[in-house]
Length: 71
Image 1 (cartoon, rainbow, N blue to C red):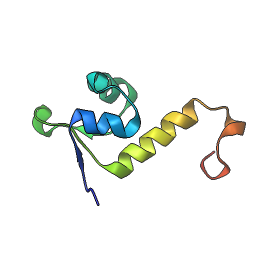
Image 2: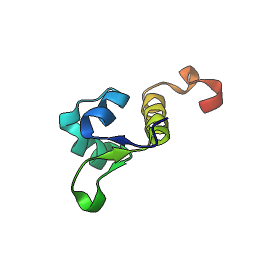
Image 3: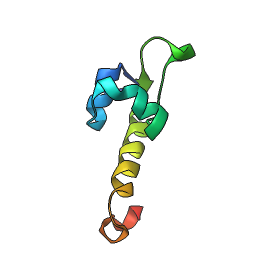
Image 4: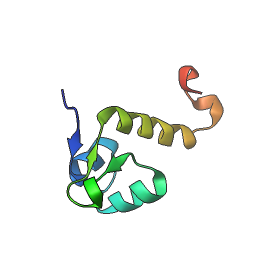
C-alpha cells in the first residue's frame, strides 16, 4: 500500500493530468499536492487525490447526474 505518491509525473498520472501543469493544478485548481519548503519532489496522499478527482467530476456534472451518495 502506498502511503504517499511522489513526483509530479506519478501524481498527475493518478488523476489523468499533464505533469507540466502541476503548478497550475495546485495553485488554481486546488490539487492536494505539496513540496517540503516549496522545493524538491511533489508529494500527495492517494486518498486526497481521490477526493479531489471526485470533486472535479462533480463540479462538471449536472446535479441530477451525480451519484446519489455524493450529490
